[in-house]
Length: 161
Image 1 (tube, rainbow, N blue to C red):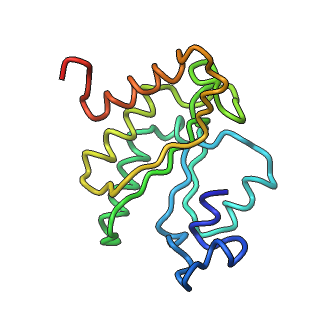
Image 2: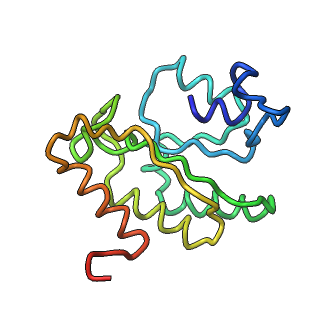
Image 3: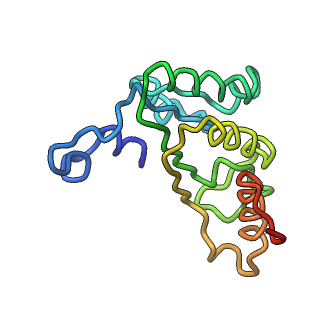
């Protein structure tokens, strides 16, 4: 949904504020790590100008290769930068069940960290937002705590710093 809105797909009331539609060009967008195989859902992305890499494809080609290709394409386009929109439900539900649509077989923390580290090291990242993590589904804060620790690794942050 968020991806559709920022690329100008949806009601003008929210996709075209101040006549700025689209906020991000479809051709400058990568949807990464989806594991839903519903043809209606995937068809919307496949029929757009958005680059799409399913989790199956990422694991076949290699997460390092996919990430390097996206960074190279971004540099070639001389883009202003990369904005990362991280839906936490891209993670496997065994390590992150506190989301609105948990599914088995998602990214591991190692895979997520490999991708995010490469993106941040590229110097192209302008910002990042994190969504879908639902603390109400994590009453003891166990999963959220591990998530924060894993994200901190990307920035080489730990409690001793």
